[in-house]
Image 1 (cartoon, rainbow, N blue to C red):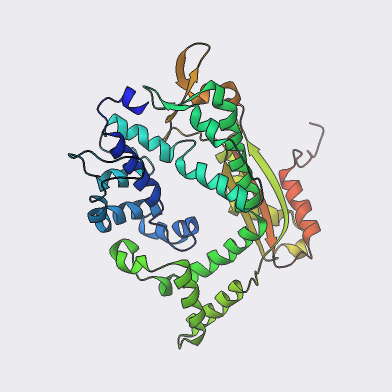
Image 2 (spheres, rainbow, N blue to C red):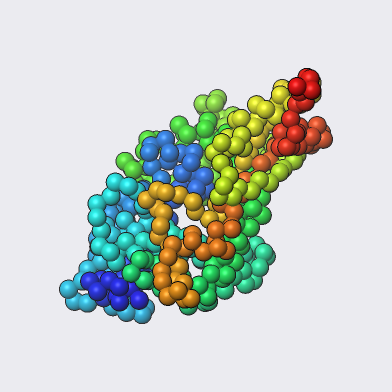
Length: 380
């Protein structure tokens, strides 16, 4: 279908090879602990694993990629050569400052940054199976059958919309129950504190300036290195090594004492909510606690799941719907079932050193969430 709407697109062998390389390399820029490393390390240098991956593809892997001539199903034509720069562009989130690209290449990008991508189609099935959540989380074959490229871009036939919504629901449920499990988030809280203190010892400078060193900087190398820190002559590093050993032994300093779920629809102002920032929640929560508990060690964790995109940025508008009754293409968000989906879901958890004061903490959170407020002083 891509060739029908983009007659100037390269051969099937080129397109398939390009997508295979993009799929294989889209996470090549990841550091230890995946997306956690993006937020707590790469951000300091203005990087993400995607921008770092793009640099690795163009600077380190380009000589290998340009020599690829075929894939298991097809081959490039004689006058074609894989362009590493196109692979690097495909794997990155769309930005508003990019140079114009061929229509066929822009359409392919929706397979890596749209509502349903080759990445999340894969990890939802794999993780649902490996975690025991479901052996058949959604119908991949049906979703692929009803997906095609129209003159607007990646389009799904309205007969496949319920399968797409099922996929989106399963993905959101995996985030709530597996990726955002209370113990996982407790480990993240401890890891965040450790990363902040350990940065000077973990990696010197920007990974972009030392890709050779970054290649060998993995979870395995990190976990081996930090355990050696207990023998360091540096007192601070020695103490950090002790804390790392405790974490590796699953001696987690935080226990989830209560949690509440919040769902935001299209008409809700999510950013105006107090639950858009854990600092606001912690401040108000402490105000509502009994006097003797106001200084209790607490951590507020708010885990956000995007159920369906609702953005006006460069990544928006990549998915479309074929309306068979009216024989026309329209934005996917125009479908009535799609419009009724929530935009996002937030899990607000309160962590403490022990569960001893779970009762008053839970009541304070309920009071913060409740619809009622402080009564007026008079009938006026």
